[in-house]
Picture 1 (cartoon, rainbow, N blue to C red):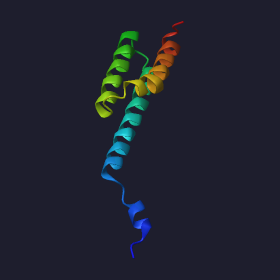
Picture 2 (cartoon, one colour):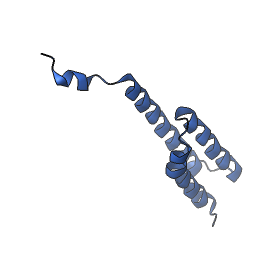
Picture 3 (spheres, rainbow, N blue to C red):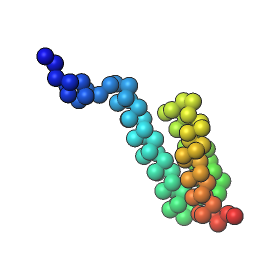
Amino acid sequence: MENPETHKSQIDPEIADENKRLRRLQLMMSMVMQVISEQSDLTLEEASELMASSRKAALNLFPGKELAYDLIYKPRLQRLIRERFRIQ
């Protein structure tokens, strides 16, 4: 008789791929946010370009998930840019 735990320990390749892409996205967004908040010579234009590039990269990892990006990361980046450049 087969042990049901055996199936649980084998990760579906699609789930493993999605988890890998998610970790990559989280790392990328963390790095973008760190650069925006800590790089002293960063201009507002460069920060905006970083934000746009991060969106493109996120959608390459997760095509069709524009709404998710716009709900999760866009507000965080906008707030960070407003705080960093003291925009009202």
